[in-house]
Image 1 (cartoon, one colour):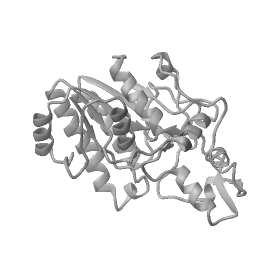
Image 2 (cartoon, one colour; image 1 turned 90 degrees about the vertical axis):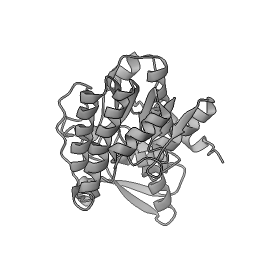
Image 3 (cartoon, rainbow, N blue to C red; image 1 turned 180 degrees about the horizontal axis):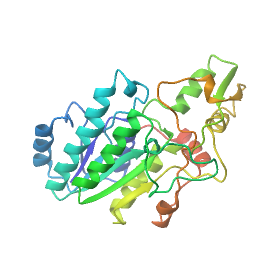
Image 4 (tube, rainbow, N blue to C red; image 1 turned 135 degrees about the vertical axis):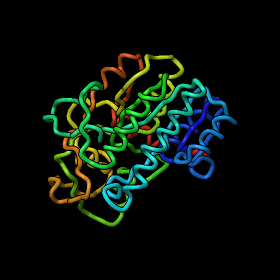
Length: 284
C-alpha cells in the first residue's frame, strides 16, 4: 500500500491526481489525519496502513517565517516529523521518497555551473538547514530511500510564482522581477511523475535532482516574461536588493539533471511544462 504525507499540499495533491489517473490505491494523509511530529500517532497510522511505499510530501516551506516566528514549527515538521516518518518506514521495511530542496546548498556556485547530487551541502537559511537535517535522518534510519531535491516549484494546487505573476498582472501595467537569481522551474506534475517513475522502475536508491529542463540559463525574470508573454504587462529586470527578505535567497539554484536523465526518465523543458500546466484540467 502507498502512503502519502502532506497529501493536501501543492505536490501531494498533484501526486494524488496522478495516482487516481492510474487507478492506484493509496492512503492520503495530511495534518488532520496524521501529525507527523507525533511519533506515537505516526506509528499507529503505519501499523494500520502497513505501507510498502511512502511518499513524504509534508514539509514546512515558509522560508522567511522559518527565520523567526516559524522557526520552531519549521524544525518540528522538517526535522522531527521526517525522523518519525523515516523510522516508521524502516520499521515496516518500506521505501521512502523524501522531497528536499536546492536550499541545502549555499547557492554561491558561479552562474553557468550546476549543483551535483554529491556536492557538499551548506545551507544558509533555517529552512535549508532543517531540510538538510531531514536528508541526514532519512539516510540514517531508512534502508530504502530516494531523496529528490527540487526548486522553483509551480502547479495548479497551491500558491506559487506563476499564480503570483498572473494576479499582479491583473492590477499592474508594469512589474519588476529579479534577474540575478538563477535556477530552473519545476512543474509539480513532472516531479510527481519522476517520483513514481523511480519507485515503479526500481531505480537505484539515493539522491536525485529534479526540475524541468532548460537549454540556457534561467532567472526569475525570464520565468516571469514567459508567464506573461501573452499579456500587455511590461516586465523589467532588477537585482535582489530591490526585494529584501529575511531568508537569504540562493543566487544559483541550478541543479544538474544528469543523474535523473540517466534513469531513462524524459524531462520536459520548463517552457513545455508551463504550457502543459496551462492546459491541465483540474479534477472536480
